[in-house]
Image (cartoon, rainbow, N blue to C red):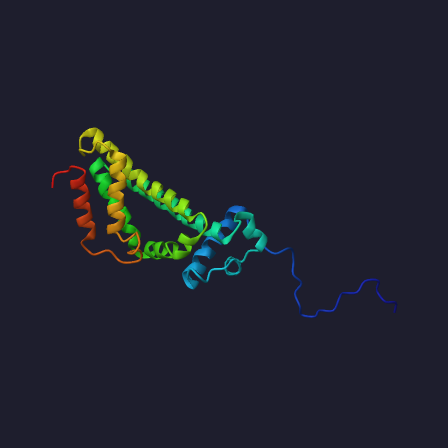
Length: 217
């Protein structure tokens, strides 16, 4: 009997890969790198983070990394900046529910102290590590993050000055001073970064700041 023109290839039990390796859109790819950078920084500390570790954790290529970031320092600054923007947005949303400038200031202080609770505390401690302060461009990023966080407070104090709630004649400057006291009391500045605030710290800071703004005890 004549042989057939086409014969099936023998089954070797091996599966042939189909298509190309999975790719992500740029937004997803960037988020994968962000999240991987955070995990590597958390697990290896400020001296152990490398681009190779971030790539392995994120599951993306070197080309994917450099499509978004020019260096490890740029990634770290971008991570810090992203968290600052998200924190500022949460504060804005929180203060939007206030019915008075006085309540808005109280909500802002509560929001800042809330950074030291639960997962936010862990993330803050990781991103506030020495890696960030040593990264090129970190000073500008930290300054911008403080500006973003203080902006809702400055708006609330200005509104209180306008309606007579507060006696300040320099709401912008007073917002900077109030923020400095709150950041310190909440343990958000060195050398207290990473420490848990004293249980009465929030009440003491709130009382001091309201008195400084001219609110009767």
